[in-house]
Length: 110
Image 1 (cartoon, one colour):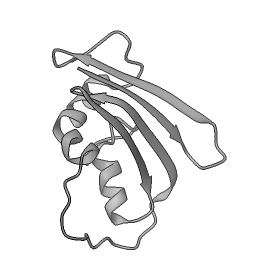
Image 2: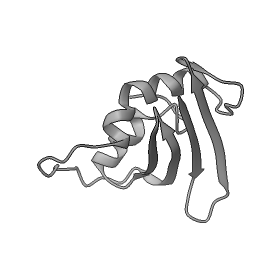
Image 3: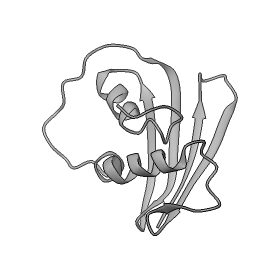
């Protein structure tokens, strides 16, 4: 089961938008409020394990580019595991994470 709450701000002082993704048996449930629930669920199933629960490894080199002031916080459960992940667009690595989860965060996948 997947039950995630997504809180998104276009900028720190901007209003917060809150959406929810609930899925059972690989399908979005009625409680889902995302605009594109099937695409969001596909992104979460494809990238969720690595993005929500990254494994320790060597340091990453990230390009120093700025993708914008947007911030998203995803909380809830992913297949029984608690999730609390923050997404930003502050450098190349963070932009890549945002793009991978694009449908969950209100955009498109990379």
